[in-house]
Structure formats: structure tokens, C-alpha cells
Figure 1 (spheres, helix red, strand yellow):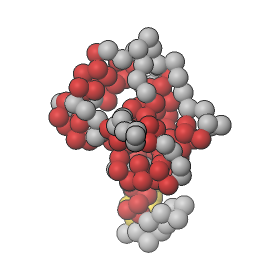
Figure 2 (spheres, rainbow, N blue to C red; figure 1 turned 30 degrees about the horizontal axis):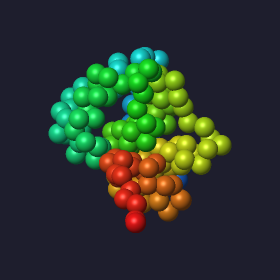
Figure 3 (cartoon, rainbow, N blue to C red; figure 1 turned 30 degrees about the vertical axis):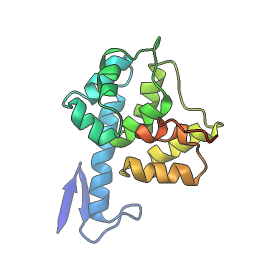
Length: 167
């Protein structure tokens, strides 16, 4: 029996690039979703973020991103290229909403920033967005800690907690 998917005939027992049919169907769906998103990337930050968060409430946003609920309003109404947010906030949103590296770059570009592959922290963020898609904020933070990022570069509120100095 053959399955037709986006115009390609795939036998049930066939592998595509080492993926099972089920895995491939998920990746192919993700590809077409990302492709559609890429065509819409050249927009101001508030337009992009409002599209990403259009069906969210501050509570659902906080649960997904592990950021404070007030960040939801700040992102939607105050953040722009004259008052940008931190990179780890953008990466947190991308991880929480399963957005790809290109969307992260578009969000940062709209704020006058980007990821620099020569910077370890930025490279780690790109790594998370390309190699660790589908992971939770907590899982990504475990990875970021293991590769040596400091607490202030972690995702969610963990990256924003003040470190208490010992006396």
C-alpha cells in the first residue's frame, strides 16, 4: 500500500533520510509550516510577536514560556527596536512555541539584533533551535547549563533570577 504525501508516493516500509514514515510525516509537516512562516518574516517585531501570540492569554503564555505573565503585555505592546528585550527572551519564546532558527533571527533582526555564530551563547541558542526542537524550556536549560552557559543566559525565568551574593 502506498501513501501519498505532498505529491510523493511513499511505500509503508520505506525510510526517507533515515526517518520512519511517521517521523517523516511530522518533519514534512514542520517543514511546510516553517516555509509558510518564512514567507511572512520581514515584519516589525510587534507584528511578528502578535501573530505568534494571537490566541494566547498572559496565563497560557506564562505556562508555556516559564516567563512572568507581565512579559506577555510588554512583548505585545512595548518591545520594539528602541526598547528591545533580551535574546534569551526571544529564544525562550521560540522554544516554547516550537519556532525555528529563522523565526528567531527574524524576531531579533526586527529588534536590530541577531545571533553571532562566533559567540558561544548565541551559538548555543542556535544549537537549541536546530538540534533540540520539541524540547521543553527545562530540558533546554539543562543542555545550556551542561555546555557552560551562565544562569543569566538561560531560558524562562531561570535566566532572570537574581543570584544572591554570599557575604
